Image 1 (cartoon, helix red, strand yellow):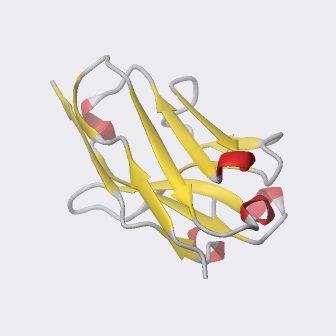
Image 2: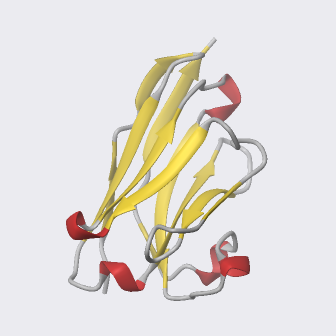
Length: 126
C-alpha cells in the first residue's frame, strides 16, 4: 500500500509558473518510478512526465517539453513537477502515480502505475 498526496495547484496567469509536489507514504519510495498525468474536462487522462527510481532519467510529453521539469527527492519521499510558461491548455487536474516497473519505455503507460493520488487542480487564465 502506497498513499500519494498532491499539492501546489491553483490559479495562475498564462506565462506564469507553478510547482506541484507529491508526498508518498512508506519506506520504499525509491523502489518506484514516479509519474505525472493530467485530465482536462471532457478529455482522456494523458501522460505528462515521469522520472526513474534514482532520478537520473526522465521522459516528457511533447506538449510540455522545455516548459516542465520533473524531479524527486527520495530522502523526502517526494516528487515534484515544476511548470513554467503555463498555457491555458495546461488547465487540468494533475495526478501523481507510482509503479514498480524499471523499464524506461513503460514510464508513459498509465496502466503500468499501481498507485494514484487524488489530484490537484491547475487552472491557467488567459
